[in-house]
Structure formats: structure tokens, C-alpha cells
Length: 52
Image (cartoon, rainbow, N blue to C red):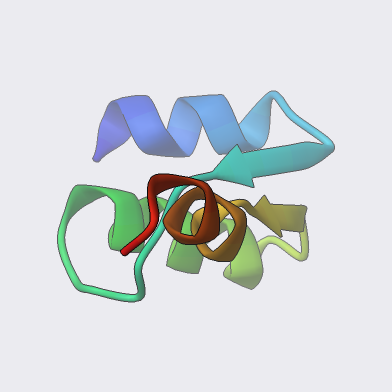
């Protein structure tokens, strides 16, 4: 979690591949939301590309 917080604290925009589940990526995205960092979630594009 400390690594995620450090990364978010250093950025202005977060690019994520997040399916909405809880866990490490979910924690990172939620922390970014709490810090009002702009989030670009590529999950839907990735699913479309992968054909799921």
C-alpha cells in the first residue's frame, strides 16, 4: 500500500487496468480518487481487445 500511495502522490494522472474488484489495484484507484487524481481506466478497452 505504501508503494501505491507513493506513486499516486507523485502523479497528476493515473492509468489503470482495473476491473472494479478489491485488492491492490482497487486500493490504488480508491486512494487516487481520495486525492482527486485524474484516473484513466483502460479495463473496458482491454476487455474489448481481448474479446472477453
